[in-house]
Amino acid sequence: MIYKQRSVPKKLIGLNALLPRLHPSYPEIQRIKEDFRIRKAGYGGEQHSDKHLLEFKPRYPHAILHDICLKQNGVYFQMDSIIITPAFILIIEVKNIAGKIIVKSNPTQFIQESPTAERKVLNNPISQLERKKLFLDDWLKQRKIDIPISGIVAFAFTNELLFENDPPMKIIFTNEVSTYLYSLKVQNEIMSKNAIRQLAFELTNNHQEYDPFPLTKSMRISPTDILPGVICPICSSKGMQWKNRKWACQKCKHIGTDYHVAALEDWIYLIGNRITNRDFRGFMLLNDRQVTARFLARSGLTHKGKGKGSFYVMKEKVNKHELTLREI
Image (cartoon, rainbow, N blue to C red; front, side):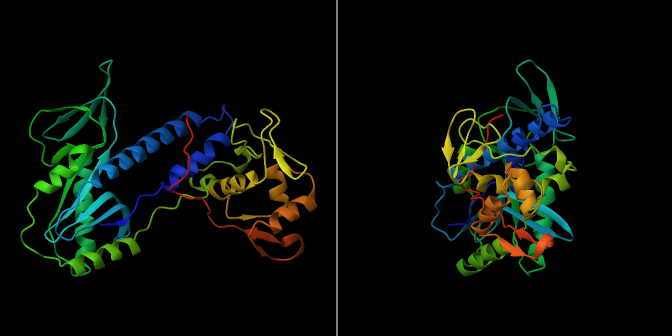
């Protein structure tokens, strides 16, 4: 049974909002685009893995949790997927890496080889998994739970894998995960069905995803570098104009009524969770203070303060399961 579904990572949500609002000449734009590309590919690989895990329906009680981030001894550690069985816990580390992967031993290295034979040393997913196993074991023992923990590395798509020697940990493709799980023996019942359920809830309740918002602060970007304007959902041009109670795109002529909501969410992710009438006007490129006041009054935001010191507080509204990630 799946106790926790996967949602779009917050950093990916933030980068999705950031890129359209940076000028193409921004000094760090290429690095940010590459970060977005890697995170988007990783999330896509994890989604691909989740689909294959749906095939795993054993007769014994179990729990599946996706994207769990815990804090242990002041350190955060994130696990792509966890499977709890009566006899053991398995951590799955999902990798979505293109090209040929060469796995060397002594020391263990993962090397990516491009079609042009260029090589790049990757972060070692086996050492990453070993670290997560240690932290999870400490986290469990603090709760008086002692159960074997193992791990596997799963590549999201069928790469060419070349092993110099047998790796110290199982490495497979995500379409093989379900079959691999069925091959594992579940003999000694350490955890009952009820204990598995309780642990699944405990893990979910203790999930603490890193919050990077606002990105201007966490990424040290000046708010003045964030381009304002309501973005057209059809042609992606910025600066839709409010006319006749509708937002109108000057480029493709598309019109709509609620496109400022997405711009408000961009403000949350990039600037902060509070906004004034003046901020709203500046970000939406509005001139009329009264029109802005009506927008804010109908926005559902919490109004605080009085007079010139008044502002509105916002909460994150995006549906993380349905967010459309942009192409770059």
